[in-house]
Image 1 (cartoon, rainbow over the protein chains, first blue to last red):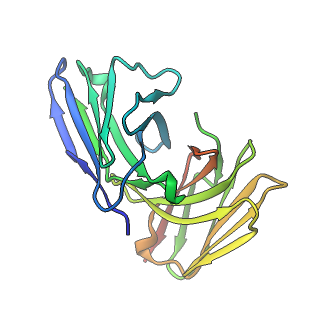
Image 2: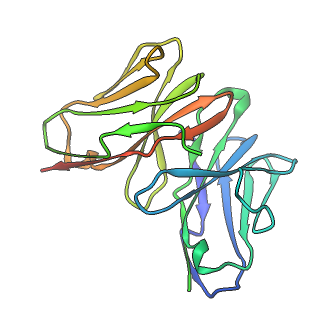
Length: 116
Length: 109
């Protein structure tokens, strides 16, 4: 089945640091990638949608300058949390989809981000 | 923003029993999907049901969809301790997917 690799799985860093999270589709071409944020015992909240080669579309309330998304190839998207602060601590999950094949989204295993 | 509401929020059953989770949504959809999430992990796709389908089976899973009531249910039969996880429904409207709040299922051995 389709595999999406997300890295790192866990990161702890100091306040003010920028953190980059990678999302790779390993065995299919992802025309679209999604980034979600999940707080404990809550659902996934869509942050942004990115199509390969174009700018990401951010959901209302998500700061595009804070959460930089790059989708430079059909197999890689990155989310950079810039100047992270404790309130950015969360579980971030990416998913990838090949819309041309009408397949469902396939999810990475998530990244737990803790900002001290 | 979230689309669906799931109930119950939490469900605890004994191994071997059936578990039923419900999902309601608000807008028109192309399809509805159910996902499973183990604690601290990503989501695993379980089953997709299209808007013109009423019922779908996959192993011990049975999903129903009632578009007139804007609701869906997920039934897990003969539950196992390994089924313990959170289950989310997600609606897909023109590739804009929204997740429900989820049901936390605990299956006691």
